[in-house]
Length: 155
Image 1 (cartoon, helix red, strand yellow):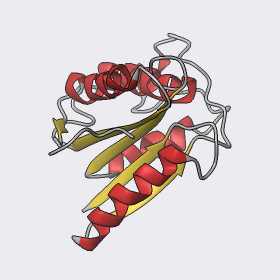
Image 2 (image 1 turned 30 degrees about the vertical axis):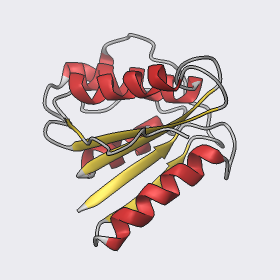
Image 3 (image 1 turned 180 degrees about the vertical axis):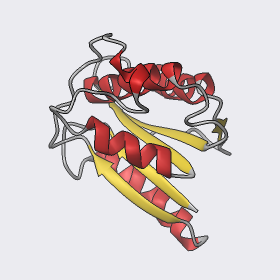
């Protein structure tokens, strides 16, 4: 099994990445391969709603790292999303990633079906539940299984 963790923080080695590293460490103890992809050094463009992705199972915009990240999402057995909470919701990088992925998945139903999904949020103040909710909605809208937790998945 392989889990792809995507860090939506604008900062390298920040609190969100620490959360993802903690979860990945537990997964690796169980023999699950993990990879963390950071959006900190990348600027993802928002979806242009061009619908050209209907012709292929990925976004046609090749000007950023989205295509490579989405290929990794499709190839993984599980997806772990992590976002800081700057303004009562997910980060702008995570929003761009999820919007584009959602449109590709809407044009090709079943691309992420039955993969496992889990989300974590790093917050300084309110908005952590909204961030978790946004990421979980992405999973649910694309027929993924959402992993629960015995405690709050935020720090």
